[in-house]
Image (cartoon, rainbow, N blue to C red; front, side, top):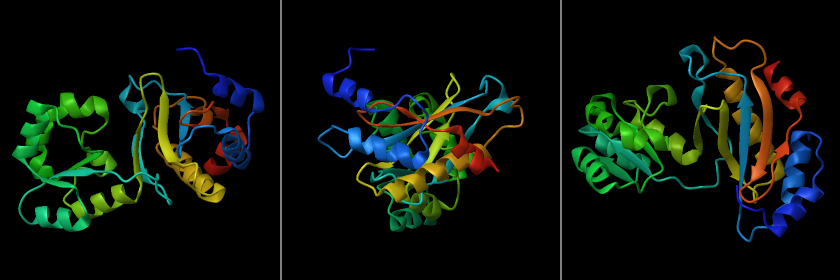
Length: 234
Protein backbone atom coordinates (compact mmCIF):
# COMPACT_ATOMS: atom_id res chain seq x y z
CA UNK A 1 0.00 0.00 0.00
CA UNK A 2 1.36 3.42 -0.94
CA UNK A 3 1.83 6.31 1.45
CA UNK A 4 -1.42 7.94 2.51
CA UNK A 5 -1.99 11.57 1.57
CA UNK A 6 -2.28 14.44 4.02
CA UNK A 7 -6.04 14.89 3.50
CA UNK A 8 -6.66 11.19 4.10
CA UNK A 9 -4.67 11.23 7.34
CA UNK A 10 -6.55 14.33 8.50
CA UNK A 11 -9.84 12.54 7.81
CA UNK A 12 -8.69 9.54 9.89
CA UNK A 13 -7.87 11.81 12.84
CA UNK A 14 -11.39 13.25 12.80
CA UNK A 15 -12.98 9.81 13.15
CA UNK A 16 -13.39 7.80 16.32
CA UNK A 17 -11.96 4.30 16.42
CA UNK A 18 -15.13 2.95 18.03
CA UNK A 19 -17.83 1.22 15.97
CA UNK A 20 -20.52 3.61 14.74
CA UNK A 21 -24.26 3.21 14.48
CA UNK A 22 -25.19 3.26 10.80
CA UNK A 23 -26.74 6.73 10.82
CA UNK A 24 -23.72 8.15 12.68
CA UNK A 25 -21.30 6.47 10.28
CA UNK A 26 -22.92 8.02 7.22
CA UNK A 27 -22.89 11.47 8.83
CA UNK A 28 -19.23 11.09 9.84
CA UNK A 29 -18.12 9.90 6.40
CA UNK A 30 -19.82 12.88 4.77
CA UNK A 31 -18.21 15.31 7.20
CA UNK A 32 -14.66 14.13 6.51
CA UNK A 33 -15.07 13.69 2.73
CA UNK A 34 -12.53 15.78 0.88
CA UNK A 35 -12.61 14.71 -2.79
CA UNK A 36 -13.71 17.23 -5.41
CA UNK A 37 -16.17 14.79 -6.99
CA UNK A 38 -19.30 12.96 -5.87
CA UNK A 39 -17.76 9.95 -4.14
CA UNK A 40 -19.36 6.53 -3.98
CA UNK A 41 -20.25 5.07 -0.59
CA UNK A 42 -18.93 1.51 -0.45
CA UNK A 43 -19.71 -1.30 1.97
CA UNK A 44 -17.37 -4.13 2.96
CA UNK A 45 -18.49 -7.15 4.96
CA UNK A 46 -16.07 -9.69 6.43
CA UNK A 47 -17.85 -13.04 6.63
CA UNK A 48 -17.04 -16.14 8.65
CA UNK A 49 -17.04 -18.39 5.60
CA UNK A 50 -14.49 -20.35 3.59
CA UNK A 51 -15.61 -20.08 -0.05
CA UNK A 52 -13.34 -22.98 -1.01
CA UNK A 53 -16.24 -25.16 0.12
CA UNK A 54 -19.38 -25.12 -2.03
CA UNK A 55 -21.70 -25.04 0.99
CA UNK A 56 -20.01 -21.84 2.23
CA UNK A 57 -20.17 -19.85 -1.00
CA UNK A 58 -22.04 -16.54 -0.71
CA UNK A 59 -23.41 -14.87 -3.80
CA UNK A 60 -26.57 -13.12 -4.86
CA UNK A 61 -28.03 -9.85 -6.02
CA UNK A 62 -30.20 -7.07 -4.67
CA UNK A 63 -31.95 -4.04 -6.14
CA UNK A 64 -31.07 -1.04 -3.99
CA UNK A 65 -34.19 1.07 -3.35
CA UNK A 66 -32.43 4.27 -4.39
CA UNK A 67 -29.96 2.87 -6.92
CA UNK A 68 -26.19 3.30 -6.95
CA UNK A 69 -26.11 6.71 -8.56
CA UNK A 70 -24.36 5.27 -11.59
CA UNK A 71 -25.98 4.60 -14.94
CA UNK A 72 -24.93 1.12 -16.06
CA UNK A 73 -24.37 0.02 -19.64
CA UNK A 74 -26.04 -3.34 -20.23
CA UNK A 75 -25.12 -5.92 -22.87
CA UNK A 76 -27.76 -8.53 -23.66
CA UNK A 77 -27.13 -11.76 -25.56
CA UNK A 78 -30.45 -12.71 -27.14
CA UNK A 79 -32.16 -13.61 -30.40
CA UNK A 80 -35.60 -13.49 -31.98
CA UNK A 81 -38.31 -11.59 -30.13
CA UNK A 82 -36.06 -11.18 -27.09
CA UNK A 83 -33.87 -8.74 -29.04
CA UNK A 84 -36.73 -6.28 -29.37
CA UNK A 85 -37.75 -6.86 -25.74
CA UNK A 86 -34.23 -6.08 -24.52
CA UNK A 87 -33.93 -2.93 -26.62
CA UNK A 88 -37.31 -1.62 -25.46
CA UNK A 89 -36.23 -2.20 -21.86
CA UNK A 90 -33.24 0.07 -22.36
CA UNK A 91 -30.36 -2.33 -23.06
CA UNK A 92 -27.35 -0.53 -24.54
CA UNK A 93 -26.18 -3.43 -26.70
CA UNK A 94 -28.17 -6.45 -27.90
CA UNK A 95 -26.96 -9.25 -30.14
CA UNK A 96 -25.14 -12.55 -30.30
CA UNK A 97 -22.03 -13.88 -32.05
CA UNK A 98 -20.91 -10.42 -33.18
CA UNK A 99 -20.55 -9.19 -29.61
CA UNK A 100 -18.95 -12.44 -28.44
CA UNK A 101 -16.33 -12.10 -31.19
CA UNK A 102 -15.76 -8.45 -30.34
CA UNK A 103 -15.11 -9.35 -26.69
CA UNK A 104 -12.89 -12.35 -27.52
CA UNK A 105 -10.86 -10.79 -30.32
CA UNK A 106 -10.76 -7.11 -29.37
CA UNK A 107 -11.08 -7.40 -25.57
CA UNK A 108 -14.07 -5.08 -25.86
CA UNK A 109 -15.56 -4.38 -22.42
CA UNK A 110 -17.56 -1.17 -22.82
CA UNK A 111 -20.39 -2.37 -20.56
CA UNK A 112 -21.09 -2.81 -16.84
CA UNK A 113 -23.43 -5.81 -16.83
CA UNK A 114 -24.28 -8.77 -19.06
CA UNK A 115 -27.62 -10.54 -19.43
CA UNK A 116 -28.15 -13.65 -21.55
CA UNK A 117 -31.10 -15.84 -22.44
CA UNK A 118 -30.46 -19.53 -21.62
CA UNK A 119 -30.28 -20.48 -25.31
CA UNK A 120 -27.39 -18.03 -25.81
CA UNK A 121 -25.18 -19.42 -23.04
CA UNK A 122 -23.41 -21.73 -25.49
CA UNK A 123 -21.94 -18.56 -26.98
CA UNK A 124 -21.43 -16.66 -23.74
CA UNK A 125 -19.90 -19.66 -21.99
CA UNK A 126 -16.81 -19.38 -24.20
CA UNK A 127 -16.14 -15.94 -22.70
CA UNK A 128 -15.81 -17.22 -19.14
CA UNK A 129 -12.08 -16.47 -18.83
CA UNK A 130 -12.69 -12.86 -19.86
CA UNK A 131 -16.00 -12.07 -18.16
CA UNK A 132 -15.62 -14.26 -15.07
CA UNK A 133 -12.67 -12.50 -13.36
CA UNK A 134 -14.41 -9.16 -13.91
CA UNK A 135 -17.66 -10.30 -12.31
CA UNK A 136 -19.52 -9.93 -15.61
CA UNK A 137 -20.39 -13.54 -16.36
CA UNK A 138 -24.19 -14.08 -16.49
CA UNK A 139 -25.49 -16.45 -13.82
CA UNK A 140 -28.98 -17.84 -13.06
CA UNK A 141 -28.45 -17.14 -9.33
CA UNK A 142 -28.15 -13.40 -9.97
CA UNK A 143 -31.03 -13.33 -12.45
CA UNK A 144 -28.80 -12.54 -15.43
CA UNK A 145 -29.43 -15.82 -17.27
CA UNK A 146 -33.12 -15.56 -18.03
CA UNK A 147 -35.76 -15.27 -20.73
CA UNK A 148 -37.21 -12.35 -18.77
CA UNK A 149 -34.68 -9.98 -20.29
CA UNK A 150 -36.84 -6.87 -19.89
CA UNK A 151 -37.10 -7.44 -16.13
CA UNK A 152 -33.37 -8.15 -15.84
CA UNK A 153 -32.37 -5.01 -17.76
CA UNK A 154 -34.83 -2.87 -15.82
CA UNK A 155 -33.49 -4.07 -12.45
CA UNK A 156 -29.89 -3.41 -13.46
CA UNK A 157 -30.74 0.07 -14.68
CA UNK A 158 -32.58 0.80 -11.42
CA UNK A 159 -29.61 -0.15 -9.26
CA UNK A 160 -29.26 -3.91 -9.02
CA UNK A 161 -26.03 -4.93 -7.32
CA UNK A 162 -24.49 -8.39 -7.60
CA UNK A 163 -22.30 -9.64 -4.77
CA UNK A 164 -19.97 -12.58 -4.35
CA UNK A 165 -17.63 -13.44 -1.51
CA UNK A 166 -13.93 -13.33 -2.45
CA UNK A 167 -11.23 -15.82 -1.44
CA UNK A 168 -10.61 -13.95 1.81
CA UNK A 169 -14.27 -14.08 2.85
CA UNK A 170 -15.10 -10.48 1.98
CA UNK A 171 -18.13 -9.06 0.20
CA UNK A 172 -18.06 -5.48 -1.03
CA UNK A 173 -20.28 -3.29 -3.19
CA UNK A 174 -21.28 0.31 -3.97
CA UNK A 175 -24.38 1.46 -2.10
CA UNK A 176 -24.93 4.99 -3.40
CA UNK A 177 -23.33 8.42 -3.77
CA UNK A 178 -22.43 10.82 -0.97
CA UNK A 179 -24.78 13.33 -2.59
CA UNK A 180 -27.69 11.06 -1.65
CA UNK A 181 -29.61 12.04 1.48
CA UNK A 182 -28.59 10.28 4.69
CA UNK A 183 -31.92 8.45 4.80
CA UNK A 184 -31.52 7.09 1.27
CA UNK A 185 -27.99 5.88 1.94
CA UNK A 186 -29.09 4.24 5.18
CA UNK A 187 -31.93 2.43 3.42
CA UNK A 188 -29.60 1.24 0.67
CA UNK A 189 -27.06 -0.05 3.18
CA UNK A 190 -29.69 -1.87 5.25
CA UNK A 191 -31.13 -3.43 2.10
CA UNK A 192 -27.70 -4.69 1.05
CA UNK A 193 -26.84 -6.11 4.48
CA UNK A 194 -30.22 -7.82 4.65
CA UNK A 195 -29.59 -9.46 1.26
CA UNK A 196 -26.22 -10.81 2.42
CA UNK A 197 -27.80 -12.12 5.62
CA UNK A 198 -30.47 -13.93 3.60
CA UNK A 199 -27.74 -15.47 1.43
CA UNK A 200 -26.17 -17.19 4.45
CA UNK A 201 -25.02 -20.62 3.26
CA UNK A 202 -25.90 -23.85 5.02
CA UNK A 203 -22.31 -24.78 5.78
CA UNK A 204 -21.53 -21.79 8.01
CA UNK A 205 -20.51 -22.66 11.56
CA UNK A 206 -20.22 -19.96 14.21
CA UNK A 207 -20.52 -16.26 13.47
CA UNK A 208 -21.57 -15.39 9.91
CA UNK A 209 -20.89 -11.64 9.84
CA UNK A 210 -17.59 -10.75 11.50
CA UNK A 211 -17.27 -7.12 10.53
CA UNK A 212 -19.05 -4.43 8.50
CA UNK A 213 -17.51 -1.15 7.41
CA UNK A 214 -18.35 1.80 5.18
CA UNK A 215 -16.04 4.12 3.30
CA UNK A 216 -16.22 6.72 0.57
CA UNK A 217 -14.16 6.28 -2.59
CA UNK A 218 -11.22 8.28 -1.24
CA UNK A 219 -11.88 8.21 2.49
CA UNK A 220 -11.03 5.93 5.42
CA UNK A 221 -13.23 3.07 6.54
CA UNK A 222 -15.70 3.34 9.42
CA UNK A 223 -16.69 0.22 11.34
CA UNK A 224 -20.42 -0.36 11.82
CA UNK A 225 -21.71 -1.48 15.21
CA UNK A 226 -22.75 -5.15 15.11
CA UNK A 227 -26.05 -4.29 16.76
CA UNK A 228 -27.18 -2.90 13.40
CA UNK A 229 -26.61 -6.28 11.78
CA UNK A 230 -28.27 -8.12 14.64
CA UNK A 231 -31.42 -6.02 14.26
CA UNK A 232 -31.70 -7.02 10.61
CA UNK A 233 -31.16 -10.71 11.34
CA UNK A 234 -33.89 -10.89 13.98
